[in-house]
Length: 193
Image (cartoon, rainbow, N blue to C red; front, side, top):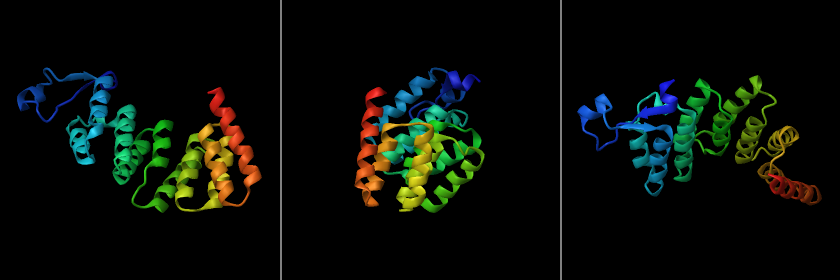
């Protein structure tokens, strides 16, 4: 659609008449992302105000949702990021957003894990979603569940951060020799990617 290649952004300082017509405020998706990124030095409420000024169709763009969610997570607004990511993932699946969903510290981590497990019913072999569920399980200290999700994710898609997470878990579980093996695999994976 037209919204994926360009957006009409009405910023707080835009005159209402021009904002309504879009005159002078047509920005590409990359420009919108750049504007969000420039807000990195501000707090969550300023970023949320900026986000609220975007047209609704633009706030459903997966790339922009991801950029916005990252900033919220970085600023400690994981609850807001979790809600936005969950809503977007219900509308349109996106592996990069699922990755962020596992990083967002929502208000109800049990419900958040439940949502990830619900999605796993229709995507049981999605390595990104398995990794997301593993991170959520780690947050809830569900070590056995986290281990299973990590091992399943890595068997499908080896990745350095996954090996590192699994190795750290194995150290916690008192399996340092196996942890060393996964740290080694993580280093090899990082070196080849």
